[in-house]
Length: 291
Ligand code: DGL
Image 1 (cartoon, protein in one colour):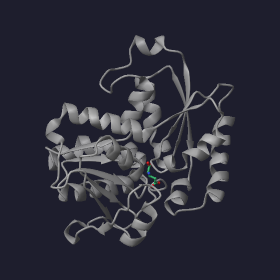
Image 2 (cartoon, helix red, strand yellow):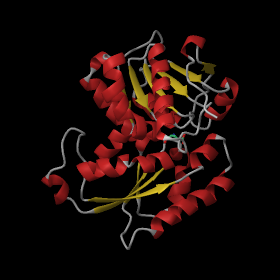
Image 3 (tube, protein in one colour):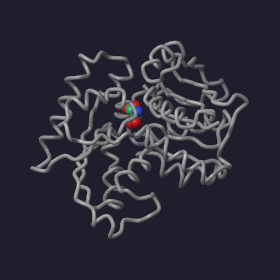
Image 4 (cartoon, helix red, strand yellow):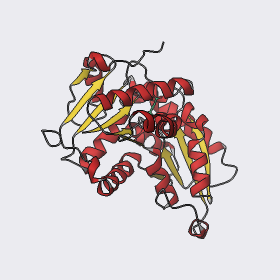
């Protein structure tokens, strides 16, 4: 089965898209609810927690894990791939949710470097709404500069937003928050017109309608769950050895480091089917709970 990891519920927006696109594929979801949200944590904590989460999913039998969390992917993925996997799990793979978005922005596959075709396109202004850690990592800015230099990027950190969504806060509380973050980004455009926007946190698709309402009408919202599902389908086509069908086709197992009942209750807003969350088996429960 393919593993998905997020700090909490946000990765379920990715799981939903993956399950629709690959209905026979089995998935194991792990939410580190005990430590969510990640966005305000230090890079070291995010790296450590992500590594432990991925190790737990490997321990559950996954050989491919998707970091369904921009914060974990932006801060930890490269280091996991370069320093940790080759030494500890050389036959396992870990992918993230940023690469599919960058490919979409650049209109190019990841391994094709930016070339004249990028400059031949019209210049574009892109907004990225994300957690504080994702913004501070500079991952979107760096990769877009490398692969789509014609795209001018404006980032907006949205501290507290993922935490509010995670806690199931009402739209009446979240709407003004989204309006404020959107207003802050629009005010910094220095006269440019915003063409498209990435909701660069997997919690945000859940309040996409609020972003839609707060943004100018003609701004294009790039869908991270859908794009990730397309990218994973293409990856599995190229790497059929990574396809893992469990005994029940389309089975989804969900684990949490937090309270399984609470996680199950809140998950119904992110995923259309009831998910019965289980605690991680004791021998895998090495994720340290950070205060
Ligand atoms: N959903 C995650 C992301 O995509 C993390 C949000 C958080 O835990 O702060 O960034």
